[in-house]
Image (tube, rainbow, N blue to C red; front, side):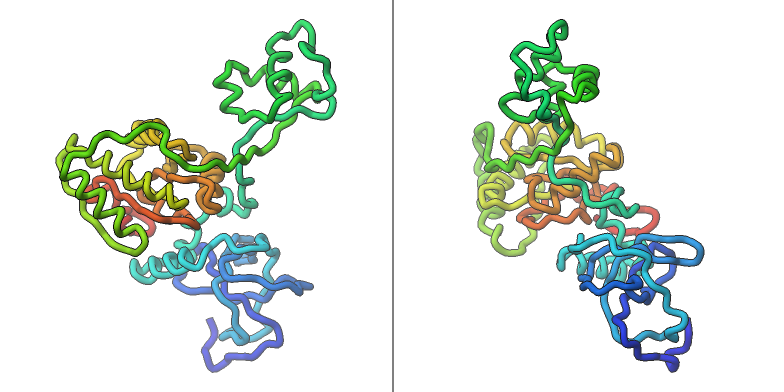
Length: 344
């Protein structure tokens, strides 16, 4: 880096970018050659860094740089028309980098999904599904003949597109779906069906201590407040979570539930799905990148009502966050031991 005495004014705006390197600083770039649009902080760009092209985040803009103009390089491409970071998430990332004394360029990607870190576009908001093509919609009932499973699926799709997981639950194997796709009778699609969030099953009767805790949390949902819920295993803490989350969902706001271990996620997910008629997503290192990308987009746009996850889920963007539950908050698993050594 050159001496600050060489600070030079440029006619063009300079983009200060967080580049994923272990260096503890931002890097100055010029917009892509021929660029005439605007860009907002929190947008991703591709930048040349040494002999590599990396995905970086525009953190701020400036009119001057400590580098002489001849050494400033142009961004290779702009990846986002709208920033992927909200103002609050932007503040969280910058605070974490400063508080935990970690290179800022390695902290910003933590608030992106795996695909977004590699420069992929944000995943479509919805679930993978199938629908009839124009050709498939024009078939007579009970065709194709000689393939009853295929004919049954086509008849089912005449009403509405169908989510892939729902199709599998109804007994339609992937081979049946693929056969119809090859015949150009069915095609893949994204299904987004926003539905009111509501409780599916009635809550359990609360004892006086549980009710006191529920009332206390409910009364503070409109302003920031911290509650410590103490109780031995089996004392009914989860029912307190469930009933306070129900109130949060009734207000149209999301709930984040942090768990200490991946092993706890399946049983917790099953319990939440049994209680609520609302989209519940799980995020942890045990699921694939594509599923994580979808869950990330659903959380960011407010489609996911409840997000369950381990410590890294604290960086997931949520535009309607109303409640955070940290289950077993004393557990050492909430402390990251390598990379950014943070406490969830």
